[in-house]
Length: 530
Image (cartoon, rainbow, N blue to C red):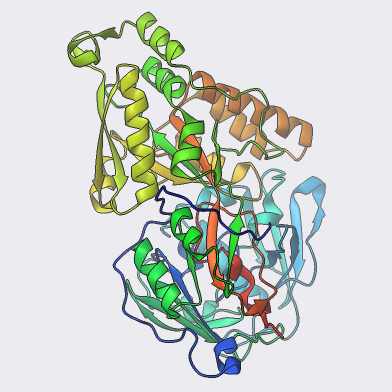
């Protein structure tokens, strides 16, 4: 990814849902240059619910507290972490064998063993553990230790993406094993093998970290850092400008205000992060396929990219971005109001009072929720409602907290955000498979299309690239014919940081960003500029 100066923008966009703004965490550019280089304060819009990998934290890598058997480099290629090498794959893709590094210790000084790896995976796979990402390890039949340094996974079927799933952070059995994984102290007081140790977590305010004295890798030059949780975009920008923050996640309009600041640089990361409207199939209006197809045609995706994102993104015609190698060319749909009207006419939705269509006495009207405080989702929701109204569909936009939205997700539309990197199975399965409908934030639309389920299963259960490509092509075409979501935009992520370090890069990023992703994904490798 490249660094760029952000041009001026008049459109406000927020990139993360936040919580309450925090007071000054300390840090920033205080003291002499040497001390400043060793301490970093980053402003982010949200915080995790838990820091336990047993409940899903860090499952895609980039945790500063933990390590997985494998990790990803800047280009997302897999590399050894706690393992000495990439896995040895045998039995036609059914057996994966990992050998652990010697001398690795957890931050409490206890040695890492193969049994810790076994405990981690078995606990995640235990149905009593509240981990909604369990389906991503569906292929695992058994995991066992062979001595202190060897771990062997046996799969039920040859899952092509399995190695990438072993970036899952490993937790210490001697600490977490004596606790309830759902409610234990480990969720907020983690112990890991990563380059940093959590020193303080003030919910809704900040998370503070220091270098792990037992870390097995090179010792970080940045000795401590703080993630300041600041919900309001403007407050993050103000604190960055004042020097209270060294870096921050910012929307385009605020990033543009630092364009001429020679002391800071703006970083742009491409992403799989998309915004979409969930259209529950159980909804009295959204359950009609004609409504969903009409909305897909009526929406002006290009205008959303240009006006809401100031060009920092791409139109989304499905869950995979248009530049992804697995993307099915030819499914692009242009803004086509005439087609939307034709689809509705043919399905019996006729123009009624106030220009809103009706069928069998029911108005084409439904509510669309977005999380309060998220300006980019609000702007998407309002633009979507405007496009829908031109086709005769009334979309009533309401902002609410997630506490209000979650109980309604099965029947009401939501302006949602998703997107995972690494393999098409990651994200697509949890987004679309009917078996996961209503499982937390999985399959929020309660989508149920047999052709899509079959494609997901086929893509997951083979290692043959041609078979997988055919399955995901079929899936993307099926989503056009029977959309359970209106896919709107893929969003680029923007960050502004003080220009004081070398080694900063960005990766292709998932939906979840700011806390784990961003230019600070490799903060342990930063060096002060000379």
